[in-house]
Structure formats: structure tokens, C-alpha cells
Image (cartoon, rainbow, N blue to C red; front, side, top):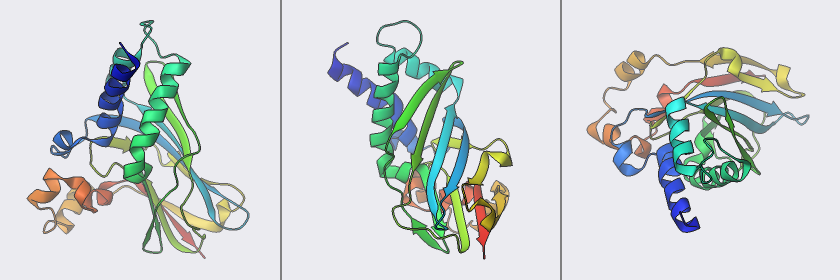
Length: 221
């Protein structure tokens, strides 16, 4: 397979899958599953320094990545192949704010591109490890909400335990924290008027998918 062909295949199998190409997003339910860990690193200035992410993907999706991008056919992912995967995913996730959600006292905050993304292949599963910094200062004051979710609902980012969402760093004890796991039935009941056909056809075109996402809320004095 030529370099150009491999790039096209990678974009199709990884980037398009993670980011829900239009034909897939129409189904409005997850096809890819990842267990995640999120560390909200604080700094001595009383701000959020960065969000540190670890995503471990399900074995079915991970095996499809190996099938498509194991270019030397040794049944695993070598460093150069993993680097290629990380580069494509980094570029593609930019359009989706790297699945990061930060709300600073009601204001949505974007994040900057990661300085590096590391892809690993461990025990039959693809891992992505990276950190993103807020695009503008987020002070540890008032109510700050942080979560990770795919606005297209194509990828389900799941936190198995509440301990998988933590605040770290020198100001970690400044805020009270609560992990919120929305009840889907309650979300549907409370937002029934907004859950129109347009939402199910294109969930990324609305903010409603964020309502279903697990998040950690910081109550800072």
C-alpha cells in the first residue's frame, strides 16, 4: 500500500470513526467505546493548567485499527504506526475541541491543541494519552464544570469510577468536587421539547449531547 493510500485509509478508519462522519452521526448512538481517565491539573496561581486525558478504546475498534494500519503485518502496532495514528487523530479532533468541555461560571471555554499525543497499543487495546490547556484563563472561583464527550454521540467516553475524574496539582484542595452522572431518562424528560428530529439526525449541531455526559463540578470559594 502506498503512503497516500495508507493516509486515506487511516483517515477513514480512525479519524472518521472517532469524529463521526455525517453518515454515521445520523444514527445518534455510540459505535466506539472508550474507558477514560481525566486529571484536571491546577497551578500555583489558582487556575486550571491543563486537562490530562487517557482513553482506552474497546477491543473491536482497536482491532480494526490494527487491521488497517499494521503496515508491516506483524499483528501489532509499531511506534511509527502509532505515531501516524496519533497525528491523524490530533488533527481531526481539533474540529471537536478535542472532546473537552469546560464551563467557567456559565461560560464555555475552548482548549488549545495538545503539544503532543501519544498512542499506545496494550493488551489488544488502543490507548491515546494527551493533555490540553484552556484557551483562556480559568480561575478556580465559583462553579467550574469539566467533562469529556463526543458531541456527535458516535464515541462513548466513559468513566468507570468517580476516581477517574480528579483534580490534581498545588491547588487541588481549593474546591469541593462532585462527579455528576446524568440520568438519561431525566435528561430526556426535562428536554423533550428540544429533542427534535434535527437532534437525532445531527446531534453535533446542538448542545444537547453535553447534557448526557459525565462531568466533574468544582465548587470554589
